Image: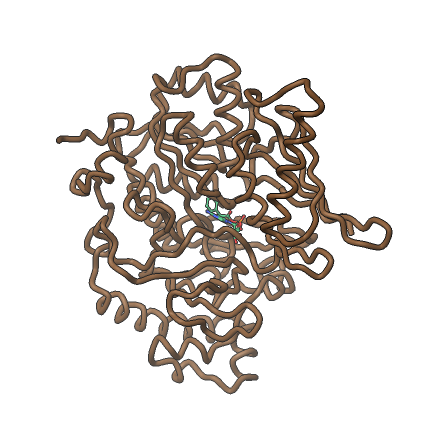
Length: 454
Ligand code: DLL
């Protein structure tokens, strides 16, 4: 069977048939390098990067001096554990440029992440950093089957968020035509997809779902639409949500991970072989997985917090950044031919755990239960509050138009069934509030699922 990568549906069909020769690899020499080569390269880069951070960033010099560690103590990859961790506080306390290793003259662009507290985290990119960034993105978009002939429409916000410009530069590097629509104005997005022949859409998965629904409401036929690929990221993408978007929009979607502090998008990308895992750009990032409580490494392949050390960053070299994102990593070879380690999709953060009457609850557990219930949409909202001195958990979930009924009894039975299902998984009582179709607010960027009012 022969496949044509620019034909809707063929990239995934080729991957499923094991015909990986149809799917191009942006930098095969590096992406398919031997493990020995990758580790030797990482070791050399780590030594260089630690010296660079020590010599140029007073924060690291002071930290390492205080710990009695010198750059010459770093000789092997395991020696990374001798180095201090970095967290958001260090970047906030040195706002805006205190962690920069170069003067602003050498910085081509800055970005920032707003986070949940007031002070943003500011990061910068030199020309060389911009090159690495666009390279990493070009790699991950090819993992999804994107080729230079594609027209890529941006639905991430441009601005300080790294998602918009990051993907834009990488797609352009590959040779795609960029359609810089930006976030919002959903109906216009749909019109542009049709009028401009958009083949690739870049969005958060929650916004892509919204674009899908609005298209359906307008009577837009996604099956005959030119759109072929969805590039997602910036927020967790539950497998059920991805599968639903793929089948309703007739596209193949990949979930791509990154964070501002170490670069932005481009840290890891999903290939069409591994699907729910993402290849980490190991020549640019050294990864560790640690126990979020102790900071000690977990056994290989075990779940823990991802810690990242960018190996090439010039403007802002960060050592051992605590991402708070929970995942596990495997170095097993991948059918796509790439050798770089794969991390599981990030579903939870160590800091998004809710403690409800003493029981630990992750929003991703709630999400998993809801995606197994046919009558509700992937949109949900969690409210935690104190009622009569006790924690109370309410899950708002939206009924699909096809399951909607005027019968109070039927709705009440549905509500109780969802409550029971949630309780059996979470081991804590939950109040479910059923919303009408469209009743949960849609966002253009990252969805905010949890409202903790305590
Ligand atoms: O969200 C960078 C990015 C933009 C990645 C666009 C991919 C696409 P921040 O705004 O700094 O950067 O947020 C980083 O978002 O620590 C994760 O908790 C979460 N996150 C990002 N991508 C994913 C993903 C960008 N694919 C924080 N799956 C990270 C799960 C993700 N969580």
